[in-house]
Image (cartoon, rainbow, N blue to C red; front, side):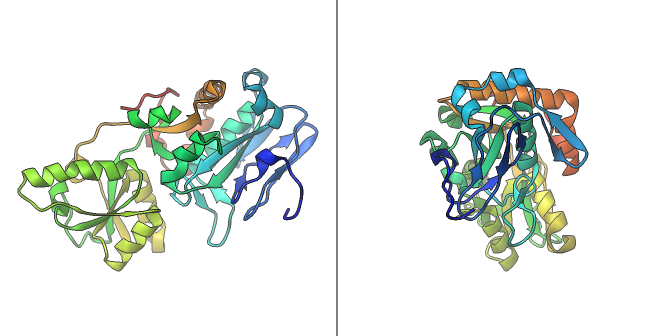
Length: 323
């Protein structure tokens, strides 16, 4: 697609688009430069979002979208990739995305009769990019927190607590939160887990232990490399990703997980949310309605089952339910 002329709103630096067959037009993908998608003459009718699961467009939900979204037929989505199993590339060197957020995004897009176009961004830059008008939506396993609700409105879609990724066999004997006091641990910058580690410092102080040596990384994959090399003794992230990484890296021979309140410390349960620009409240309502319909018809559950995590499902698509 390099060198082609395209609508201004579809020009991205790095992207992965979610194509849908549109009435009178076919969305086309290109990565490493720009995305081109033909302007739709009407909403999509259906799309297979995962093997054997087809989602039909709801004309009423499509009609509920704002006029600009209906006109261009595209929702710009920012995400931080890789963060498996939520967002990842299908294989090394590929720019084709997969993961829970990607598949669920495809399903929501199909129900709404539009295309979700995903663009990789650093996690701590996701919300500023939406606030700046560069993107409409964030789908990146982001915890819905009150302070973040000032930047976007969250449509809540999952719930998962924190966990530790450690070396196989847990050689440091991490069993309770004070076991990391005075030791170097990794975490992704800008995440709720980084904030939780700051709160854990009080626990160390109360126990008469030295503070945790927190090393923040731009991507969790960098924290995993630090763990592999021995630079940190553990990586603090969500328990779902920790379990995925432990089970899939080197055939499960390199990492293990440590979970449970005793090890991760106290935390208030807060759902993950799809962050949506406050400039388009109709989009938030539409995404909420589309997600709820996917919960009701079983599509949502099938997507989570594909990644072996049905336990992180929530029963209702709430808005700004985070604490």
